Every structure is written in structure tokens, then in C-alpha cells.
Length: 137
Image (cartoon, rainbow, N blue to C red; front, side, top):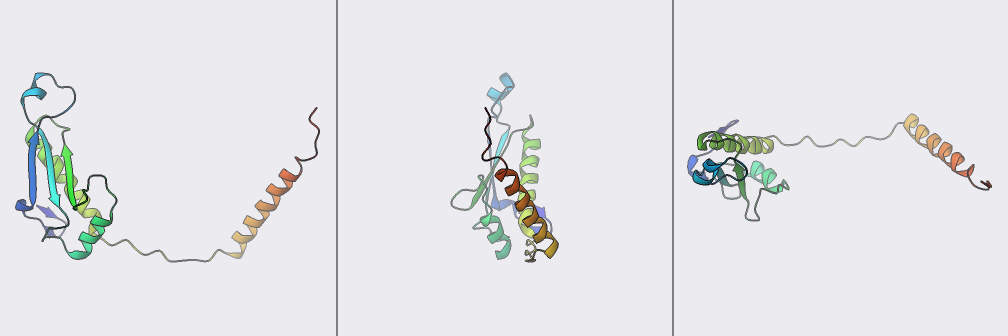
């Protein structure tokens, strides 16, 4: 499987076909069309170390504690389409870890923005001060 400039062997992907949930009549009860795709992010030799670290750092509910990504695909009625869907979602997940995030550059607030903030605080305090001491009867 090709993801960007990475090549991931099919041996690293574990696919299991299970019955789909939800409506669909008799076909759902007979045919195992849903795909459960497992990819060991922590133990994959295909992933460079920085990419592996970024993917493991993502707080994703599909990732197990052992670093295995579990994707379940059951949108379509055929095994083949669900298989393609699961692989496309895996590729999108890995692609998210390929490029390093640009570091944030700290900036200082301008004098005008500081002044606007203080003016707004002063105006708000005047409004609140005006509410006290009134008799609403």
C-alpha cells in the first residue's frame, strides 16, 4: 500500500471480515461484509520514527494501548468496497502524521490591542457600576 512516499507491506495489515450491523435484511445476517482492519503503528518497520511518534501521540479512540490502530468499515454492501474504504481511511490517518506541524511563533500584543482591551474592560466596569444602587420597585 502506497501512502505518500511511504510503502506499507500488505503483511503488516490484518483484515478480518465480520457481519455488518444495522438494517439490511437477510443479507446482513448471512454475509460477512464489514471489514476490521488492524495496523500495528508501534511495531511497523515501514514507518520512520518521527512519523510513528506523531501517530502514537494522536489521541485517537481507534488506537489501542498497544499502539494498534483498529479501523472498522461497513458503509458499503460488498467486502471489496469496505476493504478499499478501510485502506483509504488508514492512508488518510498515516498521511496526517507525515508532515511535522509548524511550530508556533510567539508574538507580542500591539500597543493598540492592549489599549482596546483596557478600554473594553473600563467600559464594561462602567456599565456594571451603573447597575448598583438602583431601586427597581
